[in-house]
Length: 336
Ligand code: EPU
Image (cartoon, rainbow, N blue to C red; front, side, top):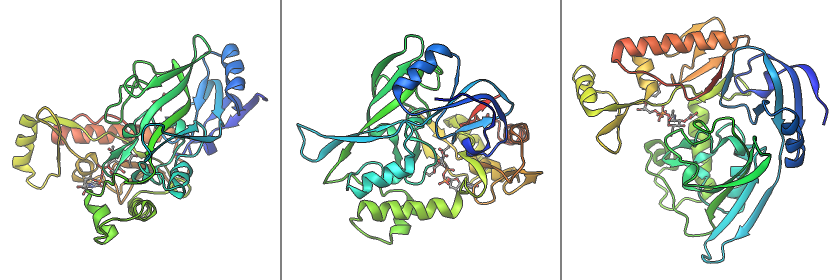
């Protein structure tokens, strides 16, 4: 374990923002993490760096988690079920592909989401009709205050749409070490309702897990930029949820507005659509831009700073607010 000085974090965040970490250390085991936390309880943890916007140099010690390993335990009570635990530093997509290679079902719709296993519960990643909370049974964390390893159940995590206890109120109290998933070994429950997925599968009635994964990869690759080519953090904003009253008012002037009905008379509106209606899709301000195929994604064409992206995000929020009276909330964690 060696603490390095003045390291650029460009390669450690998928936005590719070039900020300096005054001190930086990579750790490869929970024991090393415990030692570091004891010395630097106020450190700044980085996993896959896929859901953050860095806007200034980091004064705290930056700790890059490299905990790797996957283990599986058959379920004693159900012969079509397996429990798979993955350490936080495993790459999410590689982990999904590993599950598919073993014919373990549950995560295939979440293929090609950037980031690490440790980040997946924080914002309860979701795509194409599936959220990771549907499969998570346990999250093992290091409690910063006590340096103890604590096991949280699915209910403890208080998962919601792009939300969990790890965003608030327990932000920074826990460091995620390991996530356990309950997956199926046969009689998989497939989620194929999403229009684009159905279309891509071309009417296959019982596709294999890898056929579903391939279809999702194709859909995502066709509209979401690959962070290896263009810096981005996936959806920058959450899809806003509005009241029925507000919805019907908007529908009068925008009869083609897409929407999803939620519980308790609430309606979710795709933020990408709202941003597109404001004429901002594909717009570029220097090296900060709105992706031209999915307006929900902000991109760094090369040399954008975190502040450039933040300025663009604020312009979008102001435009959507004045056109639709809707407040867009960021999905990405902003460090400013
Ligand atoms: N739309 C537009 N213009 C755009 C983008 C979208 O009009 O520029 C419209 C589409 O036509 C469609 C609707 O908005 O009617 C929904 O679009 P899409 O299916 O692309 O999904 P989304 O709601 O924009 C969410 C997730 C994505 C996830 C997709 C697919 C959030 C914040 N985002 O996007 O997640 O991949 O659904 O399930 O919920 C991520 O979180 O990083 C992410 C990419």
